Length: 272
Image (cartoon, rainbow, N blue to C red):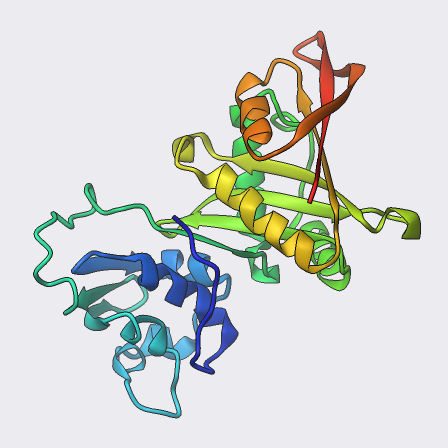
């Protein structure tokens, strides 16, 4: 289950998703690689985190990053510089559950994409496009570049009615949802939705969590109508969207050609 990032401490906002991660953890010990931590926060760790273990073990101002784990009962047990950090929780010491990597509970963080996510987002999309025939683009159909993705991210961030949310499960990029607002003043109240989840993270509630977080954001910015299209044969997605309150609003005949087969799409919408 994911959490929305809220904290009372006034440290750098980039560490709020890391706080969200530890808030959900019930493991008495857990190891996170530097790559996993950077995926969770959406930023590269500062040089000090790579050069000295003291950066991790600080618990006094003016440094404040440590509140991300200390506030939730964790401390630093060991640091392998540039590779991984072992966290230990006094709060969960008496927890009898096995906490090795094979039995650790799933922890989902959903956050807005940052510019430093561009390369990871490209890899995420390419993986999803290669895994399913139910997306608009197939494997190798589109050549994505870091520059083009960052340009799009800048456009979304500057727009009041568009956003890209990323799902990070256990420090791994698992899925995304894009809400793209209407391009004209008369369409500012609606947004088109595109969602994708990697197969290895299927059936873990990620798509639902992305949609729930996205809908909360949409309401906050004044969007009242969500729209999406789904291939007629994608029954599982249709079930999910209907569960989330979407309704069929029409059909687009001969919408796509996939593997030399013409397929139809359903229009689905939801008033929020």
